[in-house]
Length: 196
Image (cartoon, rainbow, N blue to C red; front, side, top):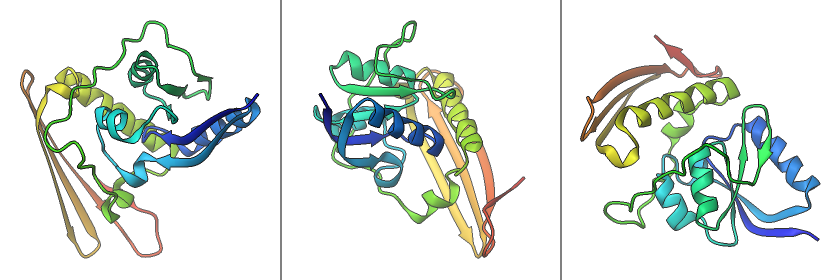
C-alpha cells in the first residue's frame, strides 16, 4: 500500500546528492508526493520554528539532515526523513539526539524571507561546500546555545560591478558576538570564486 504526502519539503541542509538518493529511496518504499517544495528557493534562511508553523502541515513530509529538528518533528507527530552524509535514510527517532527547541517566532509570523538573486550567488552548489556551510552554521548556533539565544543579527551585502562583499554580525544574550566578512567575485561566464 502506498503512502501519500501533499508536499515533500526539502530542508536547506540537503545536498543534490542526498536529494537524489532520497527520491530513489522513497520510490522504492512506495511513498509518493504531489510536489517537491524547496526551502532554499522559497524561504532561504527561514528559522526551523517557522518551517514547522507555516510551511509544514500534517499531510507533508520533511527531508532533512538536521538531527535535532528531525527528532522534534517526530515528537510533534509530523513526518520527517533524516539522511546522513553516507546517504543512510531513517524515518525513526534518532537515539541520543535531543529534539530541537522551537521558540515562538518574534514579530509577524507570516513574514518569510523571499529568495533573491544574492541567495543564488552566495549559496554553495557543491556537496563539499554545502557541508562546510552546515558546519559553520552549527558552530555559530552552538556558540550561542541555540537560535533562541540570538538577539541581534545583521547582514550587510554590497555590490560594486563584479565584486560582492558580505559582512555578518551576530550578537547573543549570553555569549560574545561574532563578526565575519567574506568577499565573492562573479566573473562573466565563469563560476563564482571566493576571494580571500
